[in-house]
Image (cartoon, rainbow, N blue to C red; front, side, top):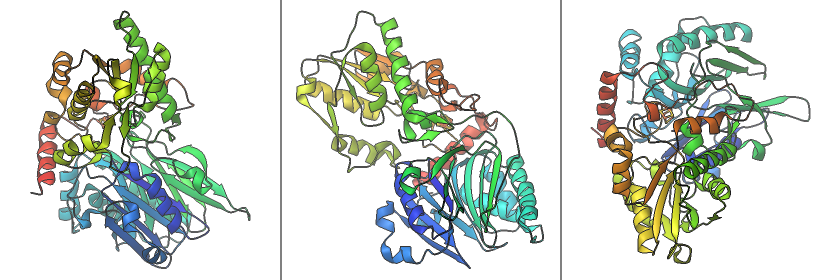
Length: 491
Ligand code: SF4
């Protein structure tokens, strides 16, 4: 998972791109980068958190009123400085690109770019392949004079991408002398929202980002979502062009609502916070149906993504909600860390149980999901160490059984607890008295119940094995999993 932002403004954009990275930091903590342009390209990238990479000195160099930014969380490629986005190429025009998602026909596209188009790939990143393929589509045309003509060329180029590049990709790109380009794959798997701001002289500024978390702080009004298969172009004068090049079903990632997105975001015109409240309500109804004679004394969220659904779950059952696990917020999100060793180590440092809230009580722990199961097991053990009488575990998400190939780090089926165990086996592994998972229909209902949205069927491939871009079969699963293990081991 990554965070991207692209801004066209009537004033310098660097500081707003920095603020965007800060507001999207939860989507990727490994690396970040900003590129802007005026008469030429300016870039600053680094490994680590945004606050560690950018300072007043290097920010001064990022001049220009058009720019893009990226927070990295690697799901493809290695971990070196060379893999940090945005990527750029000088031919044609000078193009920079930042991408959120995963390209599932990477090998075929890499062959096309290197062998047919004679371009050189510096990394194993799928985003670099996407950049070169995009550049090559534009290269075959003579530079046009008018923005209308350039938009026609962009439509052809991005249509070719939509036809030939498989998987998930939300993209922001800048093209020297031309402006800002934004597009989202035909299924709209990864999020991309938009906003605008009117200046005192009537001119308009535009922002596009993975989430609208920074809009209010920067003074932008949300104007909805970039639609699946849509291309948007803002030229250097601020004229805006858009076209939905492909119309298929809208299948945005449901896991954004479960875990990834910040609760204050509105994605695909659905409030993440409200959807999480509904997840808790639906799960509570399911609890009452299955366990009418069992009532927990207390509901404690595994902080902090599950706080919202735990709150509504407790409210629905008439049970006390407690923050009985204190989270040390100075330690990063464990799920997002590359490598199992760090993940395991950090749970105990991150969560501290409050004994008064736990001892002699029937405690229900609510988590957003159970992916690998290690964190859940350690939490249960901690609660028992602190004297819980009984421990129940509720997951706001159904069992995660399949790897994600669209940009979320669940690389191999072997690592997913529900990919290898039945619910009864998971319950014994976690050592809980009751384990309750959300039903798939209840999760979908929680996301789709309200909001003036256009979602058809959200992507739930990690839950039901249906890969919405029709691009994954068993052979491909094996290939991609092998590639990811190699990437991770630095082979
Ligand atoms: Fe999201 Fe799961 Fe689909 Fe991946 S497979 S895009 S995590 S819903």
